[in-house]
Length: 409
Image (cartoon, rainbow, N blue to C red; front, side, top):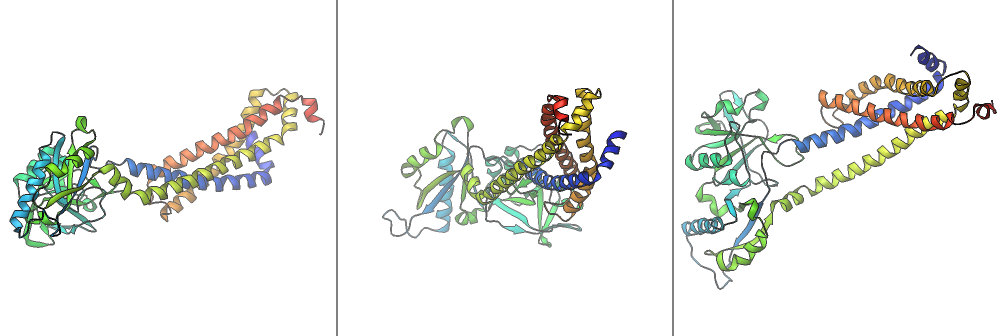
């Protein structure tokens, strides 16, 4: 190690340029690694819902231009038609649960908001207000923080008209869990006359796959008086019976699902709704990853080439070491050790730059676990590049006859 430091000091001019290159490469590599880490970590945060085997059924009402149009329906008749419409779908053997909702299902660009307070605690930012029929937690597989199953949550909504289910992170900024407040009441928009009981605390529900934090939200039972305004009819199908469900339902729609003026217009799996909702983000993400991969390849070739060329230039040095009794192992150890030592000297400086970039939130805010993992990952990747750039030309140089290698000297 002492000899390596001496050699690095004696060759300080060339090593200084090399270390500057490694510093720039390390910072750029950190940016790539941190971006990929952040995106992957965000995607893998539990969603709080499940859309496997779920569908959204589009429906509409006949106009007075249709010969089948029923005129002069009262609001009560229309609500009764919607309930019968849902019951007919529910009676199909493939269907597990049916829900009607407003601005509530996942991957939804429309939202309703609200403000809630408890004693001195108050929500800040946007709290998503979901309104749905009781089976909604079953359709999207919501779970409670105290082990409540989707069926239990549905029962709580059904049995308590005035209560609500609240995401456990509602007062996260105060460090207060909603689980500890179950059974208490929250004030709606600060109005003491509008206290609403917390029936259960929900596992936080993400807004979409690539949203970092789960959205603060509440879920209330949809008032039947609003059925005419609700347009989200969602169903969950039994996994073992989810075969051509959309096609079969549409085929039966004219015969079995014409209720009053209601009729089915479409049956869309939530996988397609998810894809459509996130298309813009996934396209941007794909382009970013492609650019990062292109940059990584260039960095790899550049750093590999730098050390490859540097080692080739030292063929005569390697020959001198060999004729003076150095073994292949000691030569490899010395050359690779020098490259890794330069990287080790540069890495703390690069880490300081990385931390300052993170503090400016160039990728996201600073998180120490992610920062440490990213810096270590960059060090390992660059170390492999350096080892590859030294090993192969050094191996070729050691296979060259020392007399031939020293001829130019």
